[in-house]
Length: 419
Ligand code: NIG
Ligand code: FE
Image (cartoon, rainbow, N blue to C red):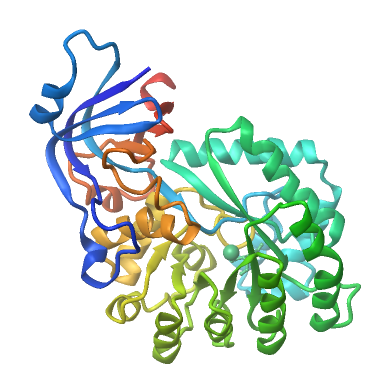
């Protein structure tokens, strides 16, 4: 049924060009106060001042009426997650609390390889159950589109298993999932070098993933103790020839050249970037590489060195925020928390953080023609936040302030119906 939302204190439309918002435009929310909006089927039909919207609705129209008494904004778009995993890494968590570093934990048999052992043992049924549970959490917190990576399989069978779980679960949950192949996440023990493992991925796994159409992007972890510069460029160039779009995990553990790789292959994004310097930033901007910051992982890892968001913004980068939801470095599905960390530790404004986690994220995922703005004809993917002023979303941290999630014109979460 169609939906009319009234009593909106602030409607954040993000109205503007259908392109990434950079520099000053990153803070433009295009707010309408005392607003209403009307959703017909899957799409937004009218959005604006309440008096104007009400006038356009026929007298006997049948619709659901929601009184927002709060802020309405585009639903979050989480452009970087590792949402398929078998179980939490609680041993790693304890080790870190005892002062061990990410690389110490990896050497002791923990880290990504621990999640890979868990994936091998888990059935598709269990992984799908977990994925549905996490999908529910994303939806409750106001996220309606996520990118989902493989990368805990680390061999042909298990990487395909992870991606098939995403594909098979997608039709039964109201969350759009865009898959990424991240076979090059860690080097399994049975390979003697990163080079040998990348050759295996190129020969055996990438062609199978391409043939089965299981992923849109290919990602690689270029960092200390993981993959090197030249081999990563070669790998991503090969993946591009098979039709994948490149992405890179980089500059998370050290300044190790991954953002250079991203620029060389014209990747759509370089993600993390804690150690990226001004040369890296300029090179990325020149090559059209978007910067995806994942500050919940810095928080969880106790890393006080955050990416230099202000430098990126001043240099005109497309800046994006995401959760990096994963069992090792960021067990967080709530974009509202990410906004809070971005504002407090990366000195982004709340306005910038909102655009970076909605419209700009849509641009990276190639879905910006349909979601990320609240204007007529866009798909109705939006949330009603239990706040009067949008700045409260990043201010009252640690809670879930979302009260209603609408996906493709359908109410998929309503807090008032849960208890
Ligand atoms: O984005 N950096 C590499 N990958 C993940 C961590 C994965 C894990 O530890 O399980 C990240 O932080
Ligand atoms: Fe990640």
